[in-house]
Image 1 (cartoon, one colour):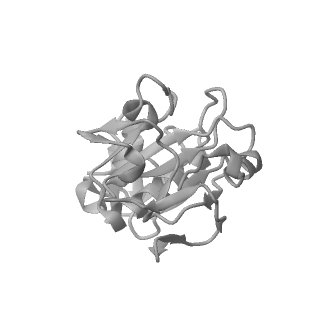
Image 2 (image 1 turned 30 degrees about the vertical axis):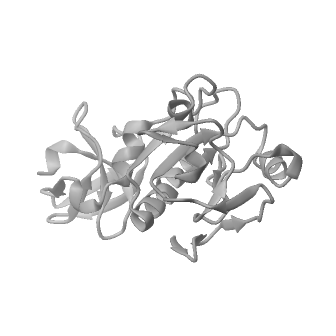
Length: 227
């Protein structure tokens, strides 16, 4: 996935042109995470395309990892409302709005979280944002999204360059990379002695989440067999 002409380009990215936009962003400084409070991806898409809603996000992330962009990133979407952050008011002038399809504080899906991190990292790398924060932080007296289940620590770790994460090397002849922490989880791939991994999370109960550098596959390995 990449950005060309202030638009996401990549497999599965959908583009809809909402009328709910006005002018250019003064300076792209922040990324703002929202919950849409909609019952479905299609329902929110319809709402954002409706001029009477007077609402839009730059990007909406669905529960299955769907991605819909409504507003070019250099243009103002109507997502922040009355807001302030870091001494600036009206964050529509300074922020890119990324919304999770989520109603009534439902758990975010794995596909949705992974895609949100992927999209946010592309945005972050392209525009060199200062910070990502939540709608509830820029409008604390009006909004409570994203809800407390949003994985901020994982999200922010995912935005870091690979060079910022700790590099591990496989010490076993062959090592299983699993979908979760423990041998009860499925094997997603195997790595060999000397293969390079990036550590994505602290070691917990003898397991560590990693990114396999060669294949870009994420999973968990036994911490006993890496160093």
